[in-house]
Length: 349
Image (cartoon, rainbow, N blue to C red):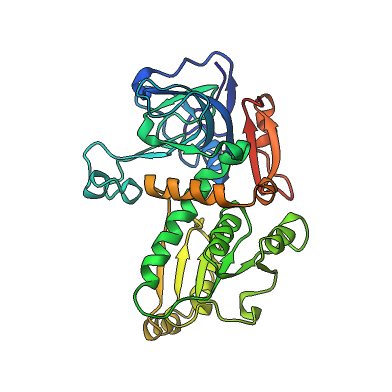
């Protein structure tokens, strides 16, 4: 069996194993044939040995947390042969903490959760994988390869759920949203904003390539100018880059009673001048909310699956800018200009 593996802690150790062991039944009752995995920055950071943890007692980790597969067998009868599914990435900690015990494992408090392809659990970049049926999310078959977008969609589904909770504070209802960053997370966040009937604005540095047109075709407005020159005041901001200037800029431009959701993970070592006192004053006096959001639980995965099923398939297909066979895996994890979402294909049937 083929599998893409890394040795955690060893830089550039990504390899395609041709004789990897078949998935153990202890991993789950559901047996799935891999169709594809998505590539994201997390994968590249694991390959660079920034983090990553092999399963207990193992030296290597199968990567790939953005999954798409077809059911081979489900002895529990929950799913049928041929169903398209994606595997939920995070599993609750064994203690468990109060949040994990309540099924909110994306909010784990003690850090003992595990994650497929990232932390303590093999990922989905292998010909076959197993998972418990309760951690497999069924997708509309009409999505085909587009189902590989479910993991990032689940992340923004959670972000929107939390935004909705915060905007229930008062009778005022937001009319517009600014999304910073037109990568997969940003464009999918914009998609869910349009599905909510909001006026959507997307800000990104790119002035050519597919991003401006994708934004336009979504019915949103594209900006490649500084935040200070937007020309409007956002009611909501989803920050999807992690760029320090945009993180603080989002807090500065959001309107009164507005909500800023931070989904981008910043890297350290970047210092920018910030008038912390003025920023604090504005946030307090305008009753603004700033919060971070990462990962997702089963509820968000199902909401993401519904959002993809309702989306325009032709538009979604343009988010996948490269489809690379697993044999050419090194090319898939290399960064190319114009990339939005790259997928590694295990099966094209």
